[in-house]
Structure formats: C-alpha cells, structure tokens
Length: 126
Image 1 (cartoon, rainbow, N blue to C red):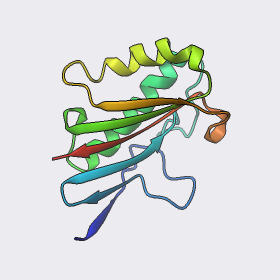
Image 2: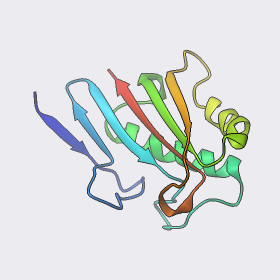
Image 3: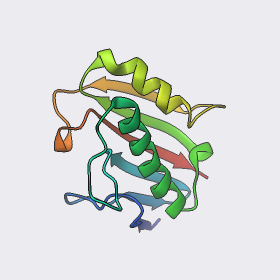
Image 4: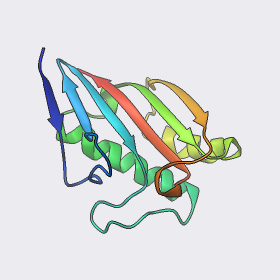
C-alpha cells in the first residue's frame, strides 16, 4: 500500500520534518494543527474560543485538500495547556461535530508549539 502526502497552502506549512497529512488507502492521518493563520502567518490567540476555531479551520483545510470532511473523522486528539480550559475548547470543537462525533481524547500538556493553548490532530476514513 502506498502513501500520499497531503499539502495545502490553506493550512499552515509544517514547521518541522512532518507532513500536514498522510493518506494511506482510505485512511487520512492529519498532523496536529495549531491556531496559525496560513494566509498571514499570525497566531490567532486573543481568546481561547477563536484559537480553537482557527485550529478547526486548519484541520478542515487539510481534510478538504484530501477530499475528506469532518463527517469522515473517526478520531481526534486534543492537546491543551490547561485542563481548566476544557469547557471552552469543547464548546468550540463541538460546533464541528454536531452529529456522530468521533472518538477522542483530551490531554493536558506542559507546552505546545509556539506556546499556543490548543493543538488538535485527527484520523479520517472514507
């Protein structure tokens, strides 16, 4: 089985030796996205709600580049710097998975790239 590297200019370019996503068969593995605006290169981190929406928009751009959508997502991993922010992040995140949400775990970590507050990765299947 071969793998296809997925890239879109509509999501932030990788800031290390990894791909935005890798498609293997009908499964898409999307790298963790942070709230970086691909158009401006600016971090969107004035408030946690907007930060989470930017992360989700970046995930959506990568999914779309591979011909997938949020309805194809089967698993998400959310990394947050403060578990006390779980409710705010969860509320914004939930707007993208209104029906049949994917499996998920949320993990508090001590630090994230560019000192953001949230990073989300996902796996999607067609």
